[in-house]
Length: 180
Image (cartoon, rainbow, N blue to C red):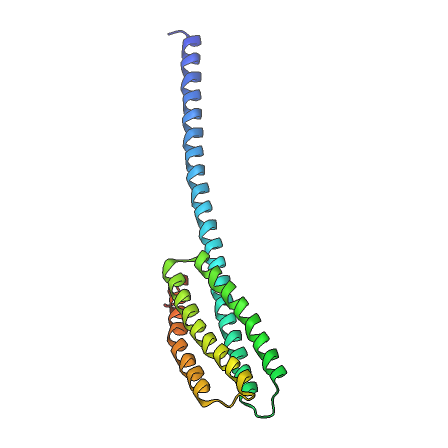
């Protein structure tokens, strides 16, 4: 073999090595990019879930506080129908925030957390109905010291406590914070 053929074979082997090395490098980079994209997706999903769950928990507490303030105002013999309406308007605003937060959980998932949030929404709605009925009865009667409505309100509050805890537990499981 003369030197030019040897040079050509060497160049061809070098070119093949460079192409193979480039291909292997590109394949490795592609896999690394896929892993990075997956990690980024998982991070964004966790952030979205933390925000949605936090908003749901916070809005649940705000709504609960608004209902208790309403209860205090309506039960107070010195309060007026205008004060009842103002307290009820605060509850309505808190309900809107709560409902929005539950919808965000439904989007953020997973299904178990979304289902737990929906069960909490149903329980909170029952409490809402008890409060709305109390408000309507107070307006009819001209006072809010109505034991029947207060008792139903208290029962609905008790009934929402288990779904509230269940949602928090579902959120912890979804975020992987059950274990230290």
